[in-house]
Length: 210
Ligand code: AMP
Image (tube, rainbow, N blue to C red; front, side):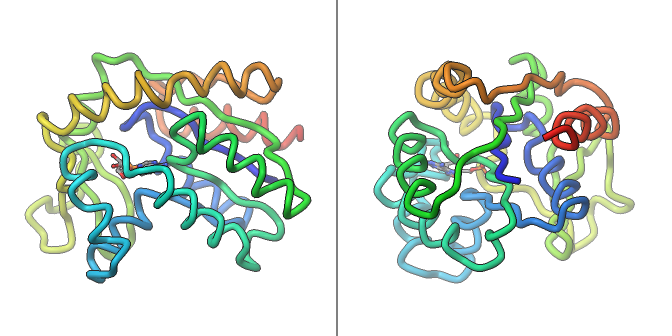
């Protein structure tokens, strides 16, 4: 099963991806996580991505598409994958289609998590993450047991300044992809403002019927 999780930053893609990984045993491919890991490890890729990410801008397509192509060719993607945060531009989507065609694969569904703009900033600025497990929390709605615990951190770009740019990038570059995939008959819209468990339920209903 080859899935794209689509939606604005903070729509809940990462949270749902982690649940689907457990459920289906297929990998989550998060370009954001790959960039953050590269930054932590001080690699060339990390150096290329960091300034774009910190400002809330998209990392250039040539850098991004390359890492996805390499990742998708790994053995653990043979039975499926969950793309989280990729593609984010029409060009990326077109290149993805070419990569998958070479591998005799296709996207089965684009799951769109719909969340109103007003919700996004509050969600992102309150987001906290566990270093150990990658689990995503929110200081108000789903607080970690001890938010001062060393394990809990806030992403560098989860601040109000970067969020404004990230939302603008989403509107200008990423949102047009909705029509791109709709025209291919692949989109399904899920209300992303429900309880996490209800969102999962809605997604599973769709995926189980594939
Ligand atoms: P995310 O973790 O998905 O919110 O991504 C965090 C940041 O990584 C984004 O704001 C971009 O700077 C960069 N990034 C992640 N995925 C992509 C992508 N597909 N294309 C360009 N930049 C990306």
